[in-house]
Amino acid sequence: MQVGAPSARTRVAKSRRSAHRLDPASARFRSFYGLCIGLEESRFDRALELCRAAAKEEFFNPILYHNLARVHLVFGFKAEAIRYLRRGLMIDPANAPIREALGRLGVRRRPVLAFLRRRHLLNRWFGRLLRRDAEGDEAGLDAFRA
Image (cartoon, rainbow, N blue to C red; front, side):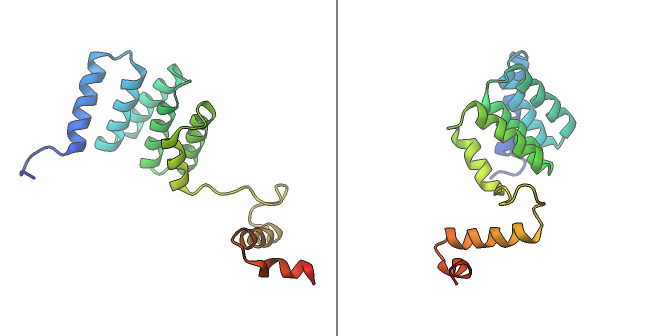
């Protein structure tokens, strides 16, 4: 790579900025431009503003929710990111990029006993028991067979 040559991310950001200038009314361009601002310039407020406005305008487009989730993840807001990824899946349950993103995040399962806190002893015990059973380990079920 040449010294002083712009990185690929910088070139993408410039192209997104140009596209946004050409058609500022396009929600898709606005969303990707917001994502680039978040990734390249670390300006959370502006990135979030652009991505939210785009998702609000085209609320039926799962890609825009994916971009909004990515902005949240870049700045460490995992819970919000998961919320927007789930919204994207409600629109398009077969969306592969959103499914992959959720898989990478390692979304937790619901507690076994939903009326108790996640950290409650019974939830932890039953959760371990079910996990062992799902992995094919029969030793976890021996306590009930005795």
